[in-house]
Length: 85
Picture 1 (cartoon, rainbow, N blue to C red):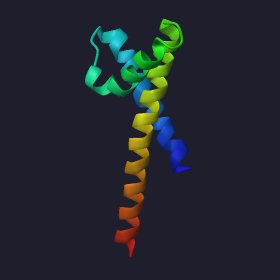
Picture 2 (cartoon, rainbow, N blue to C red):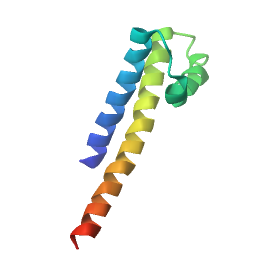
Picture 3 (cartoon, helix red, strand yellow):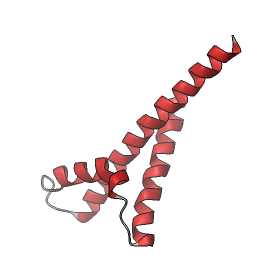
Picture 4 (spheres, one colour):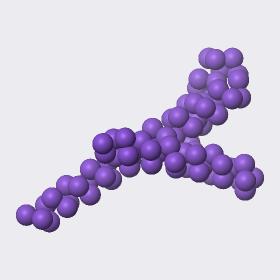
C-alpha cells in the first residue's frame, strides 16, 4: 500500500513539474533532470517523437520522486514504531 501511495505522490510531483514549465515559461531543470536525461537518451532511439519524449520524462520523474516518497514513508513508519515502544 505504501508503494502505491509513494508512486501516486511521485506522479503528482512529476505532473506539477511538467505543468509549471508550460505555465511559468521557466524550466526547473535541476528538479526535472532524471526524466529529461532519460528522454534524451531514448528520444533518439524511438525516432524523435516529442510526445514520447515528454511521456518518458514524466514517467521517469514519477518513478524517481515516487522512490524518494517511498523511502520517506518507510522512514516515518519506522520512526513511529520506534517511538511507540
